[in-house]
Image 1 (cartoon, rainbow, N blue to C red):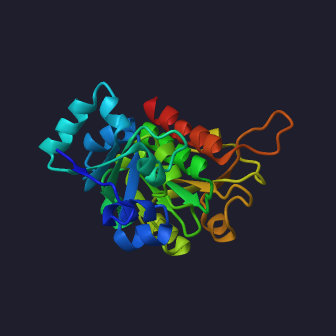
Image 2 (image 1 turned 180 degrees about the vertical axis):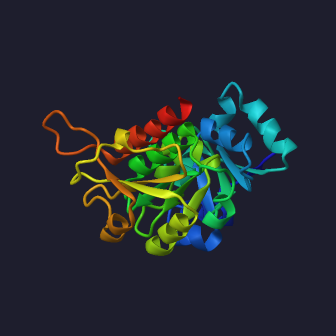
Length: 268
């Protein structure tokens, strides 16, 4: 049912360990999915798991036989390590003893923009914190967005920390990597989508804007906000009211407020 690996010179051991490095991930077009829930979520999605690593401890998990059976049914190669070796390829402090290797998948905006009459995208303009990015992708999934677009300078969504923070939504939400912010936003505007950007230095509140039409919600960099080209291309610059003494909101929280205004308006 599985192949046991006992040497650190093994190719698969070194491969999994190296997938923590962005350049290696990009070269091999693979990423790590770690933890029982995430691996099961991936198995139940369109993600194709190429291989799985398990530890001795995982075999003591009460439903391990059921999960191993799924791997067998899907003809996924399983490699077993002792607990110490597994810790060396794990990207968590308290490993659950299971991780999967899956292909990285990018979408193009051209693939998606024609799919409905009022598309709803989230554009991340230099979002760098893995936790914020995970929250944005997870919230976009929950709010029914059509995709999340990443500008250059965004955190790698396929690094292990970001993958975990998406809580499985990465397997359901189309992710578009944008090489040129201006070109991408101009393309979206040509398709009659309105660019709505979170921006503190404006007098317009987010709830005063019509979000029932095709829109792109822009979330800016944690330290610097949205970039000058995005400001200039935005149809609307909007802010979230801040009543207390806080200077601003966390990017993940702000994104959730803006996205659920789209949900609120479209459910009426």
